[in-house]
Length: 286
Image (cartoon, rainbow, N blue to C red; front, side, top):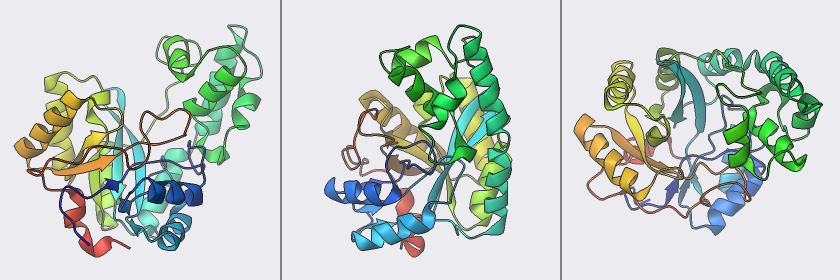
């Protein structure tokens, strides 16, 4: 397999195992149809769909890297770390993710109670209808309920009016630490990647702190081309990867045909001056 930066790799997407709407099998078929050559399923805080994704990739003739997206708390905000190419049967990462998922139901019930205070009743039961894995009930599932119940026109409106800090329905969750997440991934033989860095609205000083602490714990990659980045951010984070000597990753962050900004396989290629993360994971490609 040609492992240069121009490879059509999609190493960030979600299935019904977390907060996506398609099965791992349907995602593999969609990736193949979209021209993806190297794929990874990166469900939030969960690797329960990896065996299905591996089998589906094989059935569709897709090269595959194991994946997950771990939520961590850094500088008082939620940051996501993608893990790629790890042993999905390693006990430490399985148990670490299980602990991270703990408390989601209690948090969801608090979110529903907060929404009830502003007249939106039945939100917990409503959100559950959109959940493939009850252990991973999230804001996304509440957002889908709020749209379909007619409280908002679309998901962006939900997050302007609800479920964010200072708005009805927001309840913080205690996530993993950056050290824990990077450690679980690397000790399972994978590479840790900072997901969609342009989304965090960090100051340059805060972003520098994130990257340097991430690297100090053994993190080695950063998403450069991703569905939520602008063209200017593709260039910005290509420069960041070069400056810090980080491997570059690429992924759509696809969740749902109706909601996602970009489809599987539709991203522009990484710049040729970058070292792609998959070049360091050749022996872990299935």
